[in-house]
Image 1 (cartoon, one colour):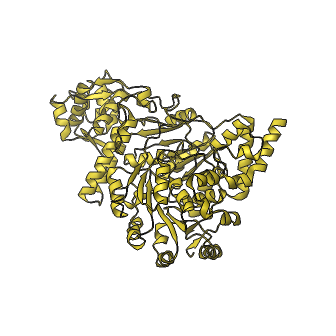
Image 2: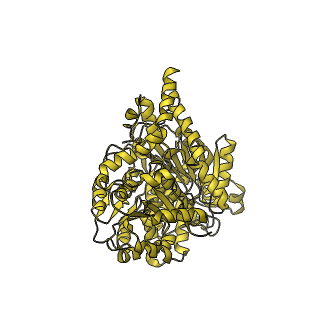
Image 3: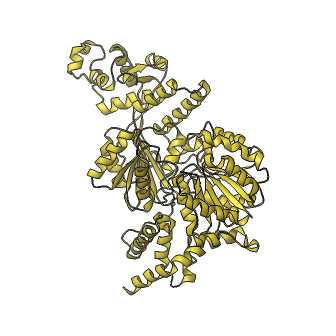
Length: 623
């Protein structure tokens, strides 16, 4: 199908242009988006771009990155061009802008030519304010030639980590964006990302010609997300416990390492009574679109997905994210858990992992086609991820250090380690026993058999290989199986043991095991606490929970929103987000003027929905 542009409705077409004398950013923020004021560094960034400046914005998911280019695009003359990596993400953002009365469209390859012609007419007559486009479509000769003749307000490069070879979602087609600096020298370029360590940030600046432009760091902390990690022992039981503890209105995501696991996970979740779906790259396009549509519609669903269910997730009320396998880097993990709690309300993230995950990830790096320098960096990122998973001190502080931030030494109050600090014990002797058992059994067995030998358990395999005659047989009877598995996993994490993933998971000592065996290195280990479903205290810095389940007025507003979104074919949250509905339910405005003062109710939404919302309020008051 030919490249084309979604075309905005008539209301958006006329409302997207502020009058030249009314292009004040604070006025636009309130009138169009319904917010009383900017947050954090938003105002600084907005004014910088309005004045013609370029830059790099590092801001956490949910921190308000989009306003940093949307408001300047409405204030500056001409068209704002937004480079975005996914069709689903572009369409959701365009739908949200149209709800706010902004003339917006998205350029991609899945639309009818009729729509393309309509939008080309709008572009030709200057009736478009924001155009979302994929990097592939932007760099087509016809698109660039058209932009050469157009009046441009700005370029915004969203998910800018995709341009960096060091980024966790590097996309080669983003490299072509290097032409923007030379081809459009007078147009501001704003690169934005929520996940970039210092190396990636510098590479983004170099690739996009932003080395002389300022970097706006908004901080990466998401204190409303309570993060936890625990060894994967009984995956289904652990997930069930976590889901019960993280319940409430909203959606959840379970990230799995393989396509088969997503389908298996969705199947047993459905058997448990949950509305669960699978999502992976191997599905047909129509099935993926339907899964994404159901998720974005606002239903209380669980998505069991690979990382293919990624950057296109804009839903604000995802209440929890779980991983059943170790992510390859802190950047990947941070972006994936960042899909929870975008509305600022309390959310939770759980990481389940095992020694095999660590060994498999190391093996894939070693055997991969990357250069030695790239492998070195990937190993460093994996080691940082392992350090977060095995942390005995604040996980959040370790995570933020990966992004160049160092927080105060006190407990964050929003991770499992700070809420329930683990006890440490001197595991030097236990480590020596386990490494010795691995060596004496011939480096040919996995952890289960080695533990049987240590515990003195006379299994068929122990008898077959006469391992009951070894000096290490029974020397570990004082520790339970779970403790020995923990010792093995922590030794793998610190690099003293490896797992032969290409065979059957045999434990293999490394050079780092030698000083432990010789007593030259002390080994402090963490005691395991298997309670991922324990109810946590509210996360530090979280706003009041907007989901007021059981409140009759809030529920009535949600039901109306769901019907309205279904009629329009848009995600429910682009009508009003939960926190806006909660504020309406709490304030109970009596007229349109009072409703206009609720954050998130801009002029366009007031015109569209005031009558219906006020009718619901009157009905509840009379009832």
